[in-house]
Image (tube, rainbow, N blue to C red; front, side, top):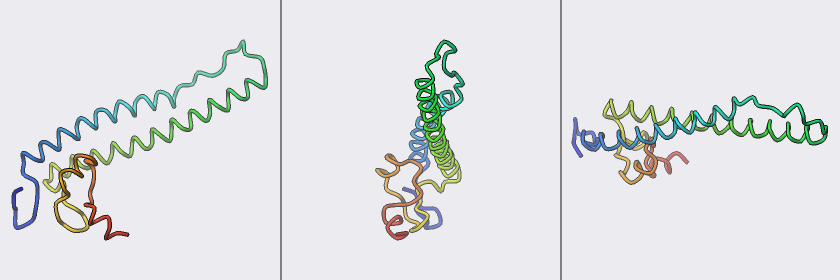
Length: 128
């Protein structure tokens, strides 16, 4: 840990470690988002040979619910991607890992588990 104007911050080497971790998570999240978008945008409907009205209504209902769920999951994934991108910006600004509430460093273990975290556990508890 380096001290810059008596403010805590992670060293450039530590920030690079976190950057690599975040880039890997970002790549995976983007792939998952793309898959969900394909699922959501998939416009394949029922086959024209399917003439049983009751089954057709049930299938269309299930298809719509599946698309809605894919859309919700894609939105959550997009939010996660934005948080990871924000973490990369904080790394570039050398403010990554500093709790917004306490100003202290967020423990590495927490950042490895939740790399986009902006609050330490103490900081989260202060907000309750």
